[in-house]
Length: 329
Ligand code: FAD
Image 1 (tube, rainbow, N blue to C red):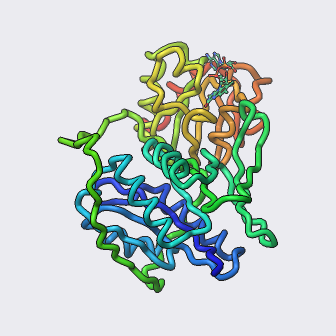
Image 2 (image 1 turned 180 degrees about the horizontal axis):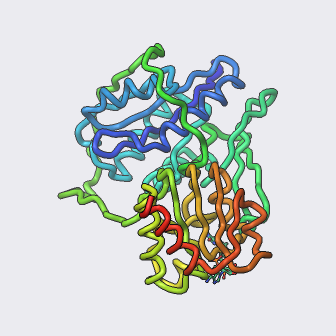
């Protein structure tokens, strides 16, 4: 029997799905249309996840595989690996997609190793080659200068992790029909390597991945003080602060703020780059923004090639002027 189903791992935190799960679900729907007879399956682990199951169907799942067990409430890598490997062996998906979050990156590698299949990490594009029923997995390589498309023709499932913020989610349609399969899973006795005593959410200070407005600073900001001004502008516009790698490397802001190839991929409605030159590694992380505005004192800075609007000038004059205009509105 031919198996052509697509598994999408729905990563949850506090009984809520992480947005990347819905981004993957939307992509899986698109792929499934090119893969004859295939169904999209959302897979989730834990308990008290009934609402997430319903949302998974609304977001595009044909079936939801709900592995119900309170031992799986917290992410513990070897437990999740064991369960998901068992689910793959039982239901035999052709494709398995996981978000490239901190946990997802680890988990995908552990599952692929156990199943002796391939894994393309950190993809930015996925497609189907219909005649071969192969997943084409695209990701940047050679420092972001080339895009590589990778296939896994010999092994199943074909596995990929996908960067959060790269794919577009579908709005939920709660009238969609779908089936929820509740798997009453008995966790086998496994060596207790980790015990979670308490979970304390990290306040990273930057929530820029899904912010509608992002004000980013680069080398031109000149130091941590300059970032306070960007924070003020971001607060006035209901947005968040981001940064180039140069600013992060200098320790002006933490890594959580970094946008670009080795940082976050974002697609805000408005992106304002302040004192950022526009290196390709930065641009790959922002190019899907609706409107890009650049403030740079060098009129030949490459950022102006991708910007919808540009201000040539000293950001230490331009940003306070913008703050003043908004405050006086
Ligand atoms: P610069 O290139 O130094 O540019 C500063 C800009 O500020 C200049 O254009 C200057 O004209 C302007 N400026 C200076 N003073 C002012 C002022 N007072 N007012 C207005 N403008 C001013 N970079 C990232 O950002 N994200 C990544 O994820 C990333 N990943 C990378 C991965 C690899 C493998 C490599 C090799 C590089 C990566 N980089 C990344 C680094 C990238 O190549 C650039 O070095 C970096 O983006 C440059 O940061 P910048 O634009 O802030 O600094």
